[in-house]
Length: 413
Image (cartoon, rainbow, N blue to C red; front, side, top):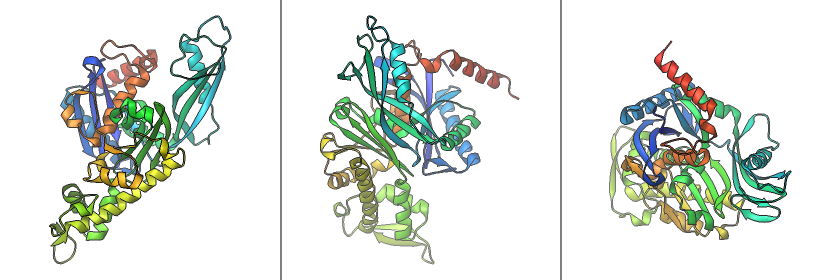
């Protein structure tokens, strides 16, 4: 793996997507290769079969390596699941010498203080995202570096996750031959890929409706305010079709993609769809509108669950930018219209932005997380790619880890 390339692994309930990229022109990400494989061994975003999950990841990584012509030694990995919890916490630090400006050490110290929270022993802090700083009572400071003051506060968004869920995911990725650079919450990654800065400032909700989960990220005043993951997603729509139409899962999945619509009234009432079903008559015709009515009921439920979670933390009146849909289920026809009716907010379908190279492959809401993992990693760590500034993740220890990986590649057991 060249020093100027980096990779992400989006581990979902229905697919595993590995992307390899480098820094392109004007800080855009240039996609070098993509590997997408069906996911096995995962349920609602979490590992339920180590061997199958490892093989799915290995297949995806292998495809991405062939596509990019690059050996993937390490990657930034997405994590999701209903075990995810979040809260906002404030860190406080005194500045010992008021004659000296606030330095990076002071910022690191106050952020470390914000991470100190009382959580159960079976949970770990996944992220501590600074929302804004306060310098001697001056509120909403975006960057205190170089300012003078005696007291520095930081308001942070803390994301915690199940230790066992994190360990199981890391074990699968590392068993597939890839070192885990960092674990990144998938709704936060999707927000990086699909949101505009103005939307973050005015208040927006990202609803990343994947296969087995729906990730939620609420942004206010330019920063993340709340995150959570609901254990419901696109597979539930497909299972509803299996139960309602009495057909195999694969048939229901194809029917959802080819004939599905979240607004049944927008479908011709007389249109029929031929499906391979269970029973003695292997094929039967069903009204397309009936199929769409089944999908509409579940889509309404998902959007109501999303809004219920959002209203638990903020008043929806302050979400001026509304809702941005991401994930594979966001491609369902009419879902944005239905979401507007349910939420009473503006809704659009988000696709990854600012891409170069093989961007047409990832120009799809289903790959918002894959692209966002790359963008989040670059923003958070300031990595040394293509001559850019080095950050903590590629410091001395990180390079030692990579040297060890190269030695394992060159001298296999």
